[in-house]
Amino acid sequence: ALPIYYKINKKSSLIIVLNNIGNIYKSKNDIPSSNHYYAKALDLLKNSNDSMNLARVYYNMGGNYAIEKKQDSAINCFN
Picture 1 (cartoon, rainbow, N blue to C red):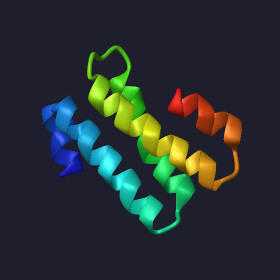
Picture 2: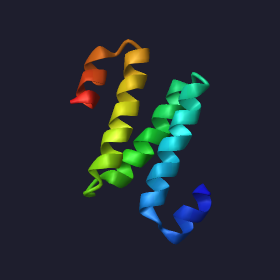
Picture 3: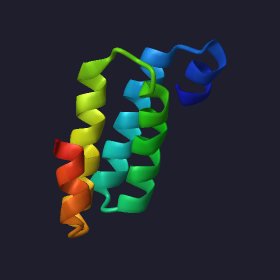
Picture 4: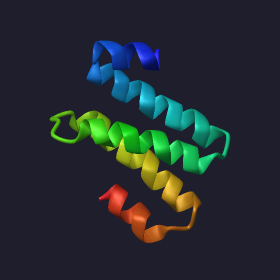
């Protein structure tokens, strides 16, 4: 699905897919790959009014930082 959404430039669906891929990597304890996909989603969310997906991605990234014991980064995501 990811290449198709990139090709047709369906940004809202692409953000959801990137976040979901991040969640899959998180479930496999591959935090660096998870953060990679969350960062891609955040990049697409810049200059967007999509506060719901922005909150989801930051929440997920914050969880990753908490797992990595990076409390300051986690707090920044949760705020």
